[in-house]
Length: 167
Image (cartoon, rainbow, N blue to C red; front, side, top):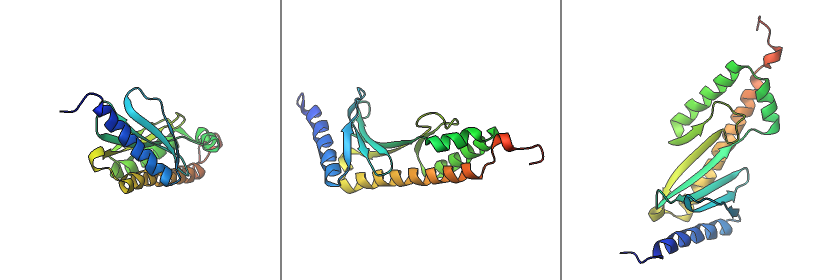
């Protein structure tokens, strides 16, 4: 039987351990207010923030997640593309993610903030510094590669306003 308050101490100890690991790696981080989580940390990796949290609903389950937004230049290019090209980009990304990710959210409208979210699940009882950092770095790399793919795709599409009926 756990003593009252010991469960809270367990979550705080886990959070402190994760923060210690991030600090040792030179990764800056901040707390994210989240009433639904025991803790929620935003770690600032080189290319984008990756969030680490433990939901109050799923005790002992650590979510490692990130999201992608279009840059202003990408947004400008995206808005110039045809509906067909946008759908093609969405379908290509969906197929790519469906083969490699278990938990992801992909919005068809890429102008929405965090139009793509990917989440990885780790278990507190098995959590190691290497395991956590590997997942965070892998997500970061995945988002960088997806961003390159989006850039290449947007660069290859013709502007919807420049298309003629003979294209």
